[in-house]
Image (cartoon, rainbow, N blue to C red):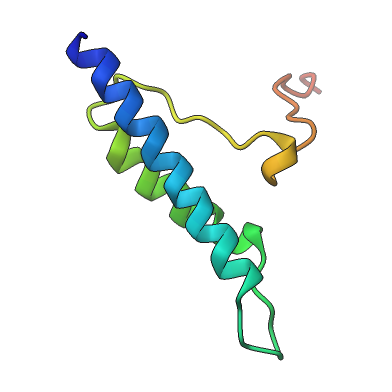
Length: 81
């Protein structure tokens, strides 16, 4: 197994575990005044998953819609005025 393949497996497993931890935190939040939401962890998730990706060999993988990711990402720039 190549080093890149091993790194990819590690990074994906790392992301899965981070997502599980976020889900657990959202489901078990004890603050009744402000419930945690998946969106509260967006920036932290990106930062920690970037650490797992290392030197940029792997591109950050966004959440699928069924896991709280966006339904639609507009990647077309607005027309120039």
